Length: 206
Ligand SMILES: Cc1cc2nc3c(=O)[nH]c(=O)nc-3n(C[C@H](O)[C@H](O)[C@H](O)COP(=O)(O)O)c2cc1C
Ligand SMILES: Nc1ncnc2c1ncn2[C@@H]1O[C@H](COP(=O)(O)OP(=O)(O)O)[C@@H](O)[C@H]1O
Ligand SMILES: [Mg+2]
Image 1 (spheres, rainbow, N blue to C red):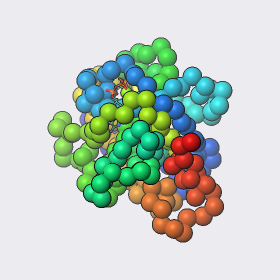
Image 2: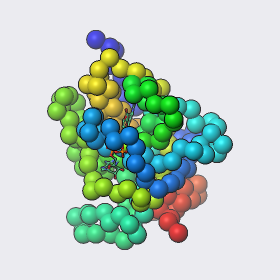
Image 3: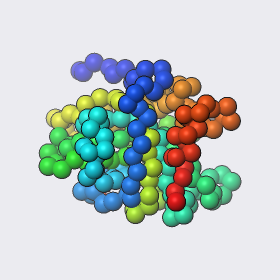
Image 4: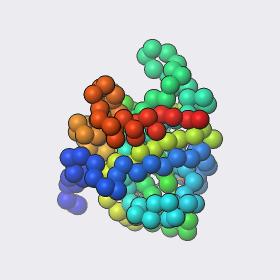
């Protein structure tokens, strides 16, 4: 048995180099996320990553995302919205050692709002239904990376990889529930300068 993982990752408020801004159109990946793992990941181009963000090492991170509402209509209980909805996310940046990719990819799994029950909560091991939205290929995605979780690993089985990603979702969720992170998701009206600036960038799609 491997030892239990820490329930949260990173300091109590984002520290440099975070938040890191990434943006790009959602592109096709290797087609494994949904099919092999049951975990859809929105892939965005990674071409200029080493030039623009040399500090961004390979690994698993958490953050917040927004999709361009011009092409993605998010359904809420109030109906369809024309402003971008901000959602929590967990992502991997790297070569997917389990699949031995030769090119680096950025793969983002968008989670449900923190006010909704978590589909990846413990007790569902082996039966987890990861969050799935209607497809949004080609839509522009803005991402603020807020913290680092762990390095990428190779695994003895597909089940072991899926279980670790399930725990990543829970770690991301608990980490983002902290006040200094939650303010990126929920605009309380009293957020300070830099947070509002980053949040304004997140939901702007010109
Ligand atoms: C939160 C998260 C953590 C991941 N961690 C690993 C990892 O440690 N090792 C690995 O080989 N792949 C990891 N992956 C990548 C998955 O293997 C990848 O999403 C899958 O291969 C789907 O790829 P595709 O979008 O190209 O189809 C992770 C993905 C996510 C979303
Ligand atoms: N919760 C989600 N997070 C990320 N992408 C999602 C989600 N739900 C649906 N999708 C869609 O699924 C696609 C990714 O599925 P995936 O099986 O990883 O395919 P690919 O290999 O092409 O990336 C995304 O591009 C997006 O259109
Ligand atoms: Mg993918």
